[in-house]
Amino acid sequence: MARHLKDVIRAQSIAAREARAESEIASAGAAIAAHDWNQLCTGELATCFVSMATEPPTEQLRNQLRALGKSVALPIMKPGRTLAWGFDGLSLEKNSYGILEPISSDINIDSATAIIIPALRVGLDGSRLGRGAGYYDRALENLAIYQNGGPRRIALVFDDEVDDSLPCEPHDALIDLIVTPSRIIEIN
Image: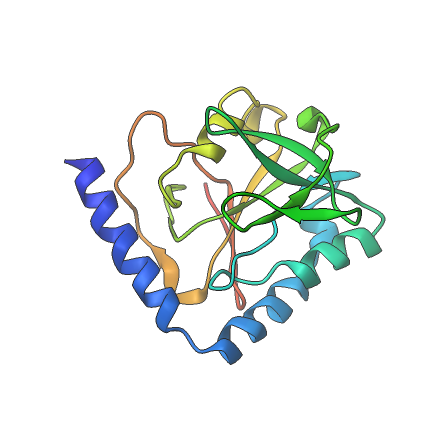
């Protein structure tokens, strides 16, 4: 039941993103980058992602994090729907999905204090709906949760993509913080 409902919400969310104006998408990236990322990412290492065309843009955010002296790791999609990590700011190439990623994967993210995660929708209860492949669920399953000293799990979405809750399954990794163009929402 939850899986079917997630698929329906996912399809609606993708359609809504595809209908979003390019100007709204661009301004969302600037607004997200303008938040106080020194407070949100307190350590020296954070992960981020290279946004797809309909996602909140991350280029300005990644530049901002590096300007703050942070190392930024980007995901590299591997077989088995797992992620490896490489440094941002070096050579990037398109993978088989057309997503830019680092060429070399040589970063251990155990010391990261923030994991910035893509999402289609998020819930105020910490639920997150991605594209359905489970890459981030697998990447986060062996990292301590934020309350136990692990990295803060931060989802980036547009303002209208925040719900009270979303269908969740046992394997779904929860988030700690929601960042939209106009808000920062701490999950309790």
